[in-house]
Image (cartoon, rainbow, N blue to C red; front, side):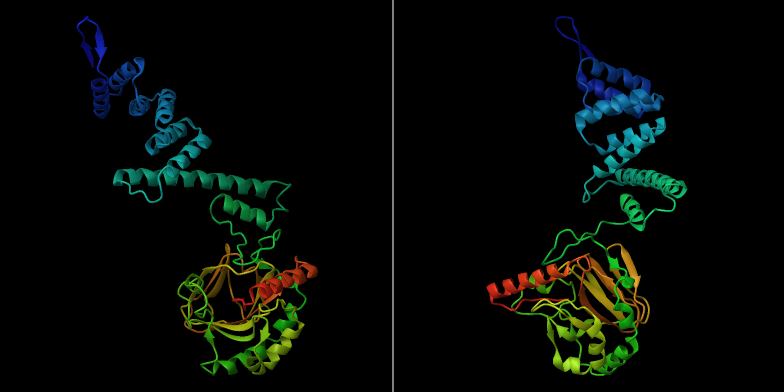
Length: 402
């Protein structure tokens, strides 16, 4: 609004002028609102809220180009403001500038902290911005997959890992790196599951499934034979003991060891001679005081082994399923599989993994460890030497698990 001073000069009252502009906009008189806002801009006192209101007024008058100029001024003055970014995204979408619009919808969503409590009105707008992001992402993903499917150069050569890369790009999958809790050998590829056909001993071991299962069933008649897989130890920190949430001393996940931490459990092995014989052809890992470990792993009905990572990335964990009632599965990284009796698989346990028994019966598998084929025999021997040196220096028996 205008006032006259003692020298008969007309002065602008910025606060009153801004309020008059906001009121005109609220009453759906955008042209009048702009006249007030233009006065503020003319004397250099327009702040971010004024430019934001100008953008809304220009939008209501179908002047998208001027609205974009105003909202850009508002963003320069305010920084990453959710409502301003959302308005800019809407304006760009009106212009058909979909690439730029999608970037601003995403910026708007990211401008809201994850733990911020939003008003109902603002939450509605936030959800709308997320839907816009999803719609643009789906459109781009469809375009990429269509191009790959129709391109003569790529139609017959698109690999599963390229498909995984697209899934990661659009948020359908996560990146799961190797994260060993103890020892990491650099340069190894993070492959969740290895092809069993690449291991000559697998088919021979699978042929012994019936005899191994028969020995297991005899052991299972002894209710005291299986012990909780995660057992407490007063010499271990509580943090380590509780690393398997809910699994410490929990019989839902139990084990019967034939080898443990590199040593034969003679009494148990004597009860399973066919199993021990069948494993003679398997190149078990050999690290003093650590490997091999071989066990029957029992998971009770309804049990869930929470997400966790293994200790060392130079080995693979092998499963030979023996009793699988169905609805029993393992997730390694992004890939989830159901066990099938008598079918071996090998996986990298340093990639986050978890397991479920959603059946009403017990699930039991034979578990052991072998060396990764992309680690040389010389490296395996040197790694064993590293651990021998560690043990000699500490003078203690290490805590280790498969």
